[in-house]
Amino acid sequence: MILVNGNVDEKSYQKIDLVWINDLLKDLTSCNLYITLVARTEKSQTSVRKYKSDIFLWLVIPYAEILASEDTKAIIIDTLLNEFYRLERYKELLDVAELRQEIQARFGVELTV
Image (cartoon, rainbow, N blue to C red; front, side, top):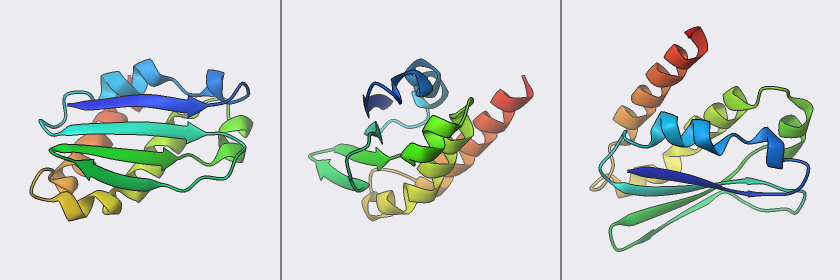
């Protein structure tokens, strides 16, 4: 199960479609992966941590790019895929290569619909 939430501000709030990203990712793994999309003016760094069998990814999205774009889906997916290397240390819980391929396949289908 993948659950995505947001840590956004007034400017980026309307640019992040959490319903779409949750629908896209929710059933791709049986591992509990919680992703927080961060789009704020305050400086923050992408990080990952594990607690018991849950993995938490604090994913910082390029703020200026989010504000400048009308459709931010590609920015979000690109950032997510580029930061997946951070999850590889938890390979006993999560197959990162397979997850990456599934997301790319689903996102490709999403664009053609």
